[in-house]
Amino acid sequence: MRTISSLVTTALAAATLAACGLSVSGIADTSSDGGSKGDAVASSEGGGTSSGGTGSSGSASSSGSASSSGSGSSSGSTSSSGGTSSSGASSSGSGSDGGPDGTVPVDGSSGDSTAPDAPTDSPADVGPDTTPPPDTGGGCSSATGCYTIPGGWSFVAVVGDHTTSCPSGYDNPSDLFESPNASNGCACGTCEIQGQPTCEDGTIDVFYDIRAGGPPGQCGSAGSPASNGNSPPGSCGTDMYTGILALSYSSIDLQYDPPPVTGQCTSAGTAETANVTFGAQDRACQTNGAGSGCTGSQCTPTFTSPFQACIIKSGSQACPSGSDFSQQHITGTSVSYTCSACGCNVTATCTGTMDLYTDGNCKDNQTQLPVDGQCHAGSGNTFNSYKYAASSPQNLACASSGSSTAQNLQLTGQQTICCAP
Image (cartoon, rainbow, N blue to C red; front, top):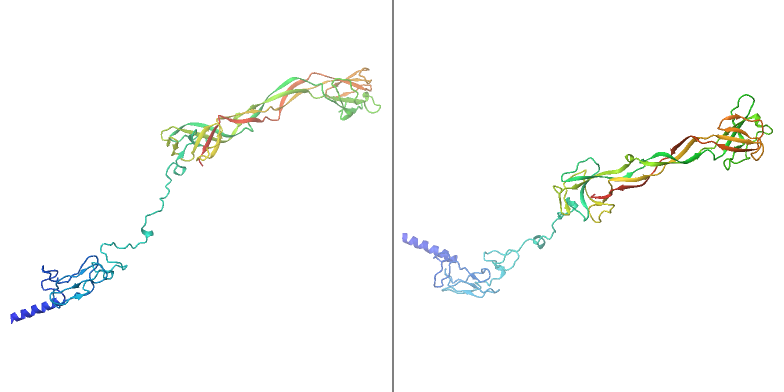
């Protein structure tokens, strides 16, 4: 009984393996005489395995494997050792059957096992980055705090006063001035009389009053005419006051005012440089090489406000075109100017005598009255001509008048400073 049961069990196992297309000898075990492999694996040259069934003779083993020619149609049959052959057992490797691992490509293309997976990104996503790199401001430019110094100019640190010390790396300060104003820079000097003044030239004014006895009055009325012309000076004149109607000079008081002194004087203007003001006062500090930040024609200074980065050159210059330095300052070490002469007046005390004549030719009955601006009693006659004789000026003096004005004002030791904004 035990033997029969074992045989039955073996027969059932063989039948099961034959139904699954496997040999009883094991998976992937093929004899050398061309016996069929238990799993009937198809060998493919360039395509996938056949999806069609394998021809079977009804037995568990087949005598050969299916080969694929690589064409679109099935070319061979699988022969079995004792059964019929089935056409279409092997596939030509068309793309519909999938790749060697049994998977089907997502795009439906041929299942070439050597082809890489198709990229899933678009060309714009995976192409080279054509965006230009950002501008980092390389090179020497004011944006990076670096300045290129034009030929013929020197780099300086400039501050707007004469008391601030130069920054590190800079020394030899030059104290400079801008926009001078000399409106109060001149004064009048001492007056000097030119030549010899006189009291001879000019009219002689006459005043009178009617005497009522006693001392002379005030001579508060102007004569008619009011002045003797005295032209030319000291000549005989008839243009004179002769009294009121028939009243003689014995009835009136007379006052003669002398002409003013005639003369010239000068008062030269003098410079008062302490009163000159300036629109700005600058201190320019030269680079000393050590720590100035300058190499060759390029400077990268480290000083901070209130100092400015500037260039300097002797004389009055235009700022270099196209450079970083566009703010022009015309400076100088000092100023020069001249002062105009002041107005000037000669003063003196003038006196003289009036010689009066009864005739019209300055000959008869001469009577003399003082010409001193005082009221004097007249004489007893009526007069028709006169001569004036002037005395030398007394208390001679010269006084200035007006003011002196600055002229030809300019900076000396001119230098042009051009600063970066």
